Image (tube, rainbow over all chains, first blue to last red; front, side, top):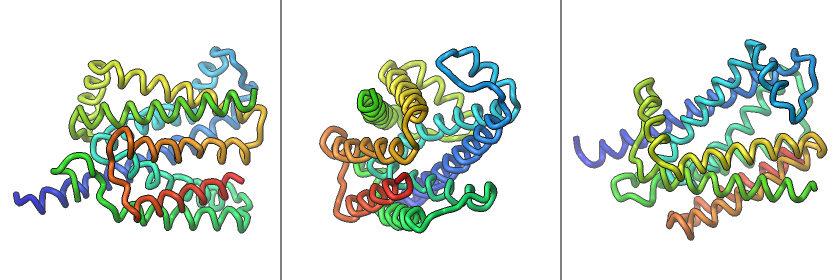
Length: 140
Length: 119
């Protein structure tokens, strides 16, 4: 395999892991939000209440998805710079706004749409830079 | 109390992400298959600084939860984005990442967007 194809393979892997992270985070947050609405108790600092909330299947699925998202983000740290990961994972805010609008029928203000557009453009700009600037073989 | 929670959340996020980024680069490329996750758990068990980084993430998460119990989300989300600025600067000066004009401009656009979405 040439250096160039190895680099493009590594870049593809990074974007795949990034998409996987965003999907897990969106699924985890949605399942958690949906499940917590069905839990009658109001949360406090009592850990027993959180453990009881996890008996709800949606909350449990949300917790599992968010743990996998945490591990996936760590795998992403092994592939790309912190200053690359932070802006591109902010696409999660864009996904949250769309999910809120489409599935929860939330009202999205002009200010929030403008913020969403800025995040999308900023993430696209950062996504077009070298994903890894600290190791010579990772630069692509 | 409000600003103490913001400070705890921001500092824990910054320290957690810096530690994880540094440690994971040292550990080498990881994957997200079932075998990859098993290998990742093994890596975590072997690296104390990585465990400290995850603990920092937990402190950040619970600080955020405590903050949103008393303050509106429209305050908590933009306040949490302070970590974004600090982390990007520390990535340059501590982790020696090359920012460049395009990445810096993109990061600033994302920061402005996060403040608008949360505000």
